Image (cartoon, rainbow, N blue to C red; front, side, top):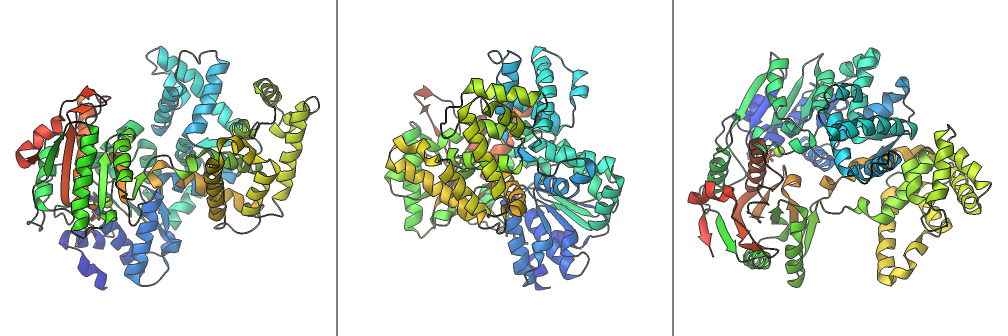
Length: 625
Ligand SMILES: Nc1ncnc2c1ncn2[C@@H]1O[C@H](COP(=O)(O)OP(=O)(O)OP(=O)(O)O)[C@@H](O)[C@H]1O
Ligand SMILES: [Mg+2]
């Protein structure tokens, strides 16, 4: 097994340990992800586990794909397809699709993304006459956090402490009811339902525990309570797992992640073997010194000091810009210098704290004809035309999806206003199915009748058309593009291109729609998250610090190092500031060779203070003005 030569002693120890549960706790770039990848190859090669009995949980689906590709390369054969690799949410979805029917879950459920959740909550607030006082988004966030923590409305009612909590509770109860009625699940439900299913159906739980021989988890520090519960259930029996993580890179606590899960692991699995990796293979020693110095300011961490063999680097440069334009121009100048030295665009990344910071860089890159890609911005699947057509597909798949119906019942415009929609909703609330409700209203409203006929027509096509054909038919029969007719030719072309891309994507799901639509929609729900867009060859990457986890680049620009941006002004408590420091640490440790830090004295015409994080590492920086 030649590939084992490519691991160091501690990494090998982690790979070879298959009797005891393993936690690999190590800093950035120390080869944690590599250990997971190689360990899967090792397990398969030695017949310690068959591919179909291995579960690998990663931070994004893209990361899972990448991992499988590498394992194939290591083994020299293509047989890892049977390894279950993906995110926790993806795993939950897999369980519910396969076993949900034994648990009264109607299998053609749809998954609501954050926008759908917000729409639903807006409606609920409206019904309660509270929409002026409260933001649907805040309530959505709060409900999602509660669900991540497995707190039911019932349990929440015992701990509410203020008037916001009260309204959250009221909405939460209704929200759950509406989801059930619409046969829809939100993201948290994918975990929650899976956990409940496994608790309530011991036979299924046993079957699963039996089947799964080995479980691996990457980026373990960002698991939330629900994910940990689900993990615990599936490994409890055999206790055969390896998880890797870095407490210093826990950056999702605002989404309910809890790096205390690392410490819980020690308590819950007495036989746990902990392996530390300290050698960093990614960055130069100079970059690591900065990372070490910064993160040493956090408390409650496993002390770790990274070191590297690459000693001939240079200390990172700090640039003080006059304003955001000046900062962007500085970055462009450096990129030009790098390109002149033969650096590839794909080896360069610009990292920032908030999405809106990408604007001045995008402008400057365009002006200078440098190709770039914004990662984690508006994703393809967020575009209006794509969401509209997917909403049509949703109501064809699950005719009780009220939120999707609401989205497209008057798209393109067909004269069905809010009053009419409310009539439909009233029937629906009385216990009619959505289709029946529309049928009722169509007797008195001509516009509704034509929509009703159209919908039924589409439903009938499920058995004869594939998804591509169905999409084409929807666009044609609804005259969908009329929606954009007066927006100019260019706009129309972009929309059409996007719809073409959606159809091309549908080609991955051949066969009649009735057999494939569920998989297609599940796949979209999982891969459409903002984290999932991929890097591109021949382009500079622009990425937020939250999305850049796990990745690496030769040259990194960490920009906007200012108080209010990094740390972000929302971070108030000591704990929150520490999380911002971890974000900064994640940014710094992405760099292999060169790291540039920058801040602007004035941004959006306001004076800015340099980030306190600069102060903490200033003795190691060379300053450029
Ligand atoms: N033993 C090794 N020999 C040579 N290169 C290695 C070794 N282990 C890891 N690497 C390389 O070092 C880099 C960092 O490895 P990897 O991405 O696995 O680290 P990580 O600990 O997962 O980092 P992060 O915390 O950022 O996710 C990669 O380019 C990887 O190929
Ligand atoms: Mg990693």
